Length: 149
Image (cartoon, rainbow, N blue to C red):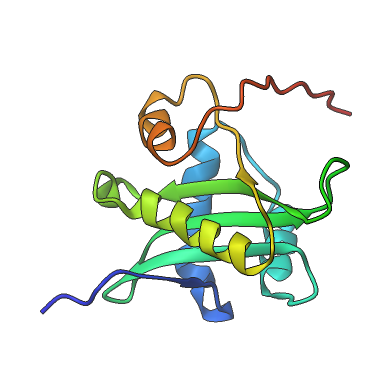
């Protein structure tokens, strides 16, 4: 009998399975990160004093997906906001509802933390993910600007 899918926080021993998922996410967005950036992010996820968190989807001992989120202050609200920074499932796991479960797990964590909002962004060309996102949230209508240094 197959084990049920479990969404849970990462633990230190997850790194060997988390790292390929993280690499897949970065490849999808056509970016290459120095290993030092990955190592710092990983250490932050494991530090209970950090506002950054990581959950994984696990089935039969295999990590199938990840979601990263963080809490931050906002000028127009008293409670912290929850920003869903990254979400990714491996190719074999797609279309099985795992992405939705990861998002819903972040919703639960945000509610537990007293946040009244979870938000995220995706690239305008990520049409497949937008099908899911349109079913679990509403588009804000805001356009993102950035300046890189």
